[in-house]
Each structure stands twice: as structure tokens, then as C-alpha cells.
Length: 256
Image 1: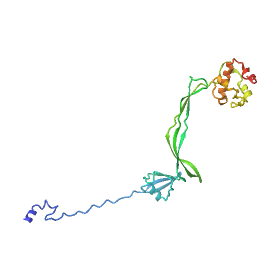
Image 2: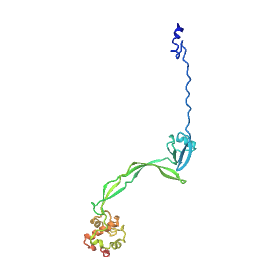
Image 3: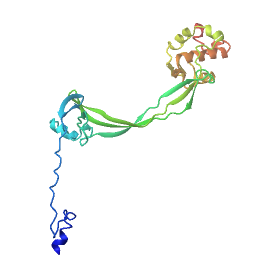
Image 4: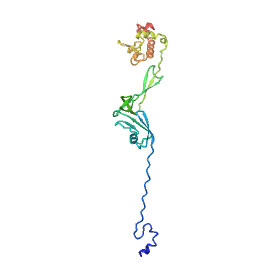
């Protein structure tokens, strides 16, 4: 009975076999052979000097090793050593460990003219704020000498400019004062030096006292103001006293 049952099922059981026979084994498929990448041109730039090499290295480190380029403990490499090399590798030789510092970036001052302000006056309309950048500093070799250099920097906060409104800057106060010889008066009073300071308490081209300077709208010391502003305020003073210069410049007023 065993053989008669097995015959009709021969076709169906051909794979499994009849009478407990194991199916035939198939040979394993062999892996496809691996192919390595062909060498390619890669530029290596070391401290600005460029070298061209042909390499099949898969990482930056492999390319540098094949090119017999050693790296120091602090050398900077881009791309990173274990990254694919791309077409360009940059190496910066460092003679010391980089030091990181935070550095202030000075805020600029922007002046805007304003006819609403008094002549030769200023007003801050927006206070500035310095920026901040993080810099890395290390010793490098330049032209055979060991020098300190900034090797990397990043701005972490941009500076905000100060905005300053500036009033008109007329060269003359007008009226009779404008026609006088102010250069002659200045030469007599201060030798024509806008920074002149008399220990007795007189300043600038026309030797203003602080009180007199303030009475004609001056701020700070007269000797710190521009020559044009000093002349403008001297003319204001002349007009204010109706031309009676004797009380202001008793010794040199005759040169007007």
C-alpha cells in the first residue's frame, strides 16, 4: 500500500520527496565582488600652500596618511579627520592649544541732522550697545616666526549703533559780528590755538571762561569744541553784549 499511495502523489511530492527523502539542497548565491572607488584629485592646502594629490581614501585622515602628511596635536583640519574628504582639505598648523575669548565689538555712532535742535548741539536719540564675538587665538608660524593669531571667530551678538541727532552748524552768528576780524582776535588771545588752556581758567581760541561759554549755549570745555563752534559762540557773545567787546577781550578786542 505504501508504494501505491506514493506513485499517484509523485508529482505533488516531488519537492518534499516520498518515503521521507530530503529535498535536494541548492548551492548558496555568491556575493557580488566589491569594487573600490577610483583615485580622484584632491587639493590639500597647508597654511595657504596648495598641493594636488590623487587618492581613493574614504576619509580625510586616510587621504593625509597616503600623502604622508602628519598632523600635530593642535592642528586644525577641515573637513574633520573622519569625514569624507571632498575635493579640498585645509590644514592650519598650530603651535599651541587654542584659547577662546569673548571680545566686545564697539558700537558705531550714526549722526542725523536735526533742524529742531539748537545750533552746534547734539542729542542721543538711541543708545547703542556693543556686540560680542567669540575668538580663538593660538600661536602659529608665519615667515619663520612664532606669532599669535586669531584662527577662528564668531559673532554671538551684533552691535547696535548709537543714533545721535545733530543740530545745525552755522559758521556765523550773523549781524555785525560776522564782518569782524575773528582770526585776528584769536591770534592775539591764544596764538590761534583752539586747544589753548590758560591756568587762570580760560579756554580755546577766544579764551572763554566756563561761565561765559555756558551763557552762549556752549557745553563742556570751549577748548574741546571745534574752531567753527568757538567762533560761532564768540560772535553770539559779541551780539549779546551789543558790540561792547571791552568787557570780554580788554587786551585783544582791538584786533576785531
